[in-house]
Length: 175
Image (tube, rainbow, N blue to C red; front, side, top):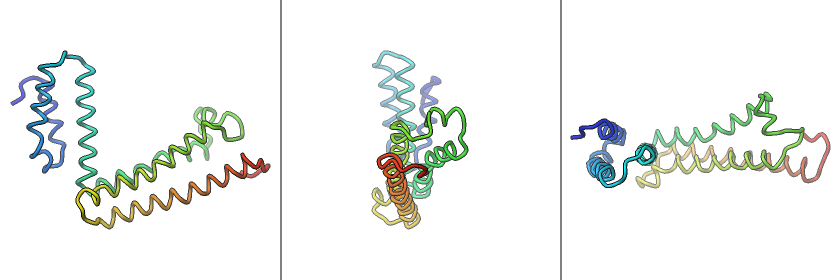
């Protein structure tokens, strides 16, 4: 049983895994953490990495094994698009001047738009992850993935077409 604070904290962190994964792997993970502490030179960076990696794996395992969590996390991938939209529509300062210093779009804004748009198919993948991992169809997850891919295709076409008309062809007053 863990005796010091870090070991106790790590053991509590392992309890956040889904039950099946926790029962199968938590003891070996705890032992690996203890071995790492024993054989590596102690440092805050080492422990932060171990805790961050474990937390990321816990989230990934929940997305893989719990369909409702995967669907919810998939929908969260729409958040950056809505945030970016709020900044542009309401011209929120100082973000809008950083994003768009003059009246026209620039390569920085295009790059950010591309990244935000690419989060949508990533969200669709996360939503479908339990279907791939558990070899069963979860219809709600399929609907979320289809919705995200539909939004992605529609927005990519609309934004791409606007960038082409306004920036490439130089049509005045096209916004």
